[in-house]
Length: 127
Image (cartoon, rainbow, N blue to C red; front, top):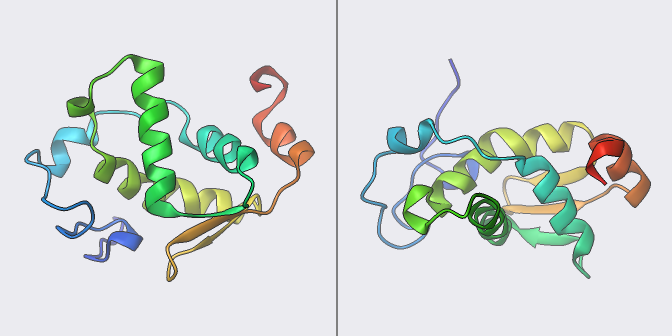
């Protein structure tokens, strides 16, 4: 069973994350699957002038991409849920591949891969 922490940088809940707590419970978003957040993270970081970004800003970018790709409203998925999933699952996985450097303490993520390494990870059908 995965460990949970109250620290939002470790995927836990915090009312200070984004102001007031979303009125939905965490369980309400559990059935919602993100499209391809790892691809979105890599492509977002590759487009930026600076390779490092704040995890909260990255979560907003992934949330916006999800809304656009699904033509979904903001009530269907909270930014808090996206950030929780990024910090508990997707960023640690990308960190293990050495494509990004995820710093849980500073709450930042930086691209460490080249464009060729990103394309190799994503595969030819996702170019």
